[in-house]
Length: 229
Image 1 (cartoon, rainbow, N blue to C red):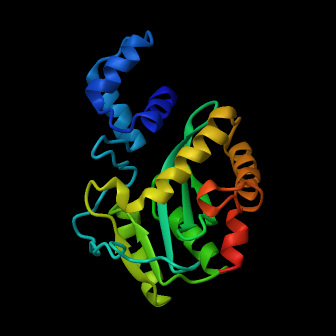
Image 2: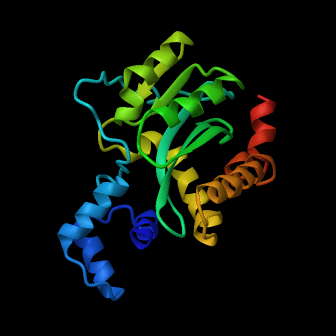
């Protein structure tokens, strides 16, 4: 699963068949059914190339995408959220983050060993202690379309935006965040357990927000841009 994760991060257009061929080239004797099962467990699906960590529930309301041609000019105008797989020495966890689009500032994040709505709500409640955005964008996963999550946004007067099905570029900034976190933190570490992962990720996000200059921000840090706009 760790090898699949790294290859998918590098080649997100790889589906089950290509991933099976890749694993065999690395010396792993696996068939496509096992690869399909593992990718399903990890929530990976090669659709334009959209990650599917969170599955859609047919009974949940799907909100329209509000960011097309929208000019984003300030912090807290648009936040986005997503979930990704994080490997450990033994086993794995899931990471959710809420990021400000304008500044790339990670407003909050949370960890869970299962894909439920509660760690997403925890991240949202923590984020609301900092600010309340005009819009929050997510994918159409069941965590984000659940009544618990959408009601928490509605109660704060936040407009809800959701990616179009299979459209990776609708949430491109958080996708870039995951790639950065994986290559600068996760793939360089071997977390002993959940507590170790939380401690190390906390240190990384402090670095990411407060010290790491971003080219797209004219080499300012996310914190500098977030607090000054």
